[in-house]
Each structure stands twice: as C-alpha cells, then as structure tokens.
Length: 265
Image 1 (cartoon, helix red, strand yellow):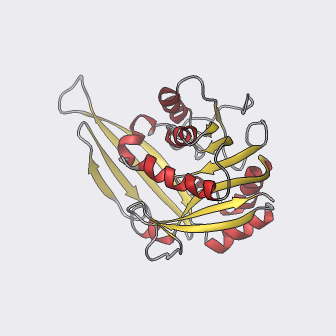
Image 2 (spheres, rainbow, N blue to C red):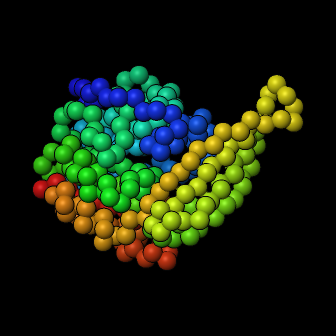
Image 3 (cartoon, helix red, strand yellow):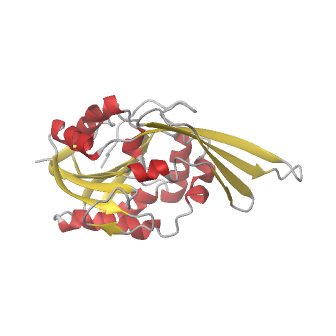
C-alpha cells in the first residue's frame, strides 16, 4: 500500500532542514543506546488505548529509529522528514521497502490513506513557530482516521535552561561536537551545533560542519489550545525525565519533556 505521495524537495540549510549537515553524525551526537527501549515504552501508551497495529506515520523521522520501532511494534510504517540527508540515513537503516518522503510542518503531509497512528518525537513540534502551531496540529489531524491517535513530545522549560540553553563540548573519538547556545528571544531559542571530524588526509587537521537550530517553547496550555482547535481529544500526558523515565504527572522542574497522547474522535 502506498502511504505517501510525491512532494517537493527540501533545500539544504534552510530553517526547515537544519539536520542536513548533521545527518552523518546525528546518531553519534544523540548517543542514546536505550532509545529503542524508550520508544517501546511510548508505543505501549497507544496499545493501552487499544491500538496495537495498523498504518503509522512518523513525522520528523530522522535516521529512521522511530520508524523501525513502529515496525517492530506491528505497524505498517512510513516516515517523513524535512532533511534529505536524514532521509538518506533512514534508507540505509530501513532498506528500500519502507516509504520515506520530504515534508515540513506546517505544510500539508504527503497525500495518502488515513492513518491509525502518527508519531512526532525528538522536538518536532518545538521547531514549529508559535503562530504555526494550530495549523500544524490541523495538518496532523487531517491525516488521522476517526479514532486514530497522535503521539508526540514537547520540550519543557527545563530543556531550555539546561541542555539547549548552555554551551558545551563533547568528544566522540574521531569527531567532537560543540553546542553553541545563544541568548533566547522570548520563547524562541537559538543554537548552533558544530561538528569537527578528523581529516583522514591531513593528520592534525579537522573539517567542520554546522547546523543551525531554532526552537520554540510551547506552554502546555498553548498546546492544549492547538489540539482543541484541530478537533483532537487529549487522552493523557506523561512527564519524561532526562534518564528516560516516564511519570504520570508532569513537573516542569523535573521533566525535560511532556509526552502527549491524543485522539481524533
């Protein structure tokens, strides 16, 4: 079954595709060996509401780890991402049998059948500007079947006062990362991620690539407002700790993310 239709290509190094230069290094930067286990926990939230398979779409699929988790959980899954570089990495991971396409919120998703589940993990909604949040939720809701679920995360203020809001350096062997945080502009946060890779042809030399990240803090009440405007029903929220644990109640002094499970009635 074809889940995705044709769509335009994203341009490299636009605000919509900051991950193009980062794509070859993304998994090393994230450095999350337990990520698949965390995804399995999130997908169990959908199972608790009666969804154990069907058609699924991962929005902002990156290098394909979330799509792989959906497939492992029994879904017929596809993925979209604004970055061609990330999609190339996803194709290497997933093979040619999984449909992948270019798409950037708040633009409409590629045309396809109504979906049982849409996921959007790893700050996807935080890259959406506040004035585009309602439209983006509407775009996601438009692809769901009645009773279909939308499962996504959103950063809390703690993320922007800790990891995103501080500059730091991390050594990863043959490469190292410099996260350069800039002064926030209200709810909008800016950072540059510099990746230095050892030059194999010139000992002692390094090559540098940089990706520019612009994220927006969406308060919980604003997200709920956007969900309601899109006709989505909020089923539950969970608080995600930095160690990956989930709690039933969100405390923004403790949790770096809120996890949202919603349904189209």
